[in-house]
Every structure is written in structure tokens, then in C-alpha cells.
Length: 87
Image (cartoon, rainbow, N blue to C red; front, side, top):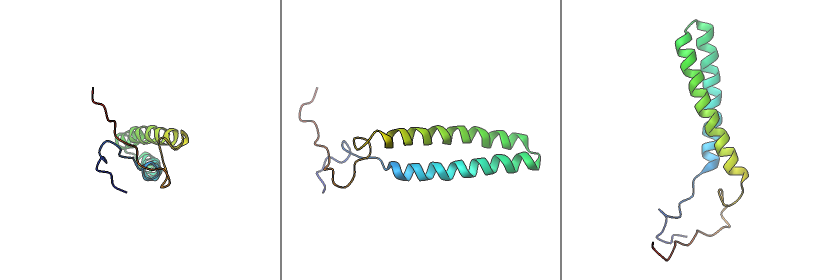
């Protein structure tokens, strides 16, 4: 159902961000281990730092998913009505 107010009532796809973050965690851990074993400490450090960013995003997404339907509404929740009064 389109209301014409989609930019103000947009919903993020947290499940997609969750799975992309999981994918990122897997690849950054694998990259860190591979570069460390290959003797490239600079690249291993870069992958390790990227792992911290991806893990923080994953924690953020999981927190918002656990907060319930206000942050991740299902198909049965109608779109939010835009505010009628302007400040």
C-alpha cells in the first residue's frame, strides 16, 4: 500500500543488514586469520579493524531487531501516518 509519504515513513530492512553483517564477520575473521598466517601484519590489522566495525553494526542491528515491531514491523503493520502539523 503506497501512501505517498514513503520518505518520511520508510522502514529499514534490518534482516538484510543482519545477514550482510554476519557475512562481513565471517569474511573479516577469515581475512584476519589468512593474512596473519601469511605474514602480512598490516593487512591482518586492517581486517581486524574492519571486523570491529562490522561487529558493532551487527550488535546495533540485533539491538534494534530485539526492540520489537516499532523498529522492525511486519507486513501486518500498516505504514505510519505522516505528521499533520509542521513546527
